[in-house]
Image (cartoon, rainbow, N blue to C red; front, side, top):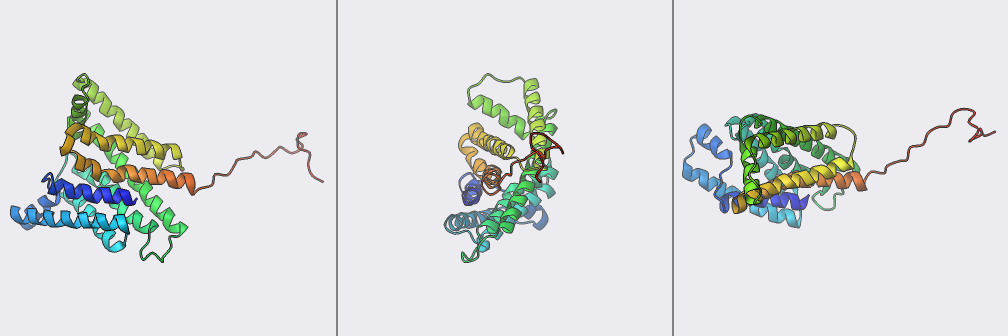
Length: 271
């Protein structure tokens, strides 16, 4: 989880400091508070430098004075994207940001500060519970986005087209891309429903691999213009992997035995 939060912080810092990409908070500052473009740029520069510092401290020693501002910034970005219509479906944006919001909070619960405070099993279970809910929201929101682009092309459609082009594959007709998006939506909504059920290590491993593919797609499609987005999506991969590790190592699976029927000659009753 440390690596995930560090990648998330540094990806957001690189998005502005290197690529000059503004966050949806810029729309909030401009439309709600009439802040000038120069002040918006200055605010993003300050936040980007702060995120670099937060990532550095998280790598050395996670602590709540650093992780709480990171989580609050993710909440502000998600709220701004929803209020000011950033993206194709603004109402879905909080779902897509759920792992980014939960990752710093989960790290606070499993790696407490000051170091003399030990993590309890209850805190670890609370962290994994939050992660599970965040992943459910992520893949549910992503499936809604995929279904919405089945008839109307959007960011996912463009991402798929660019990936095909960069991988030097044969161009796909629009009809085939539509069915690929439909298949993605079915897979993701099925995964979201399965997450609401009992613990499944195979499902967590599958979501780790699928989240990694989706995150890497931005770098494959857009090259240096997409690497920051890949880093920012590190929680989508790291949260699933953390869930898989916890379900594998921290939970003992008991064997199931059938109770013999009364009078079973194979197992005579004890006297």
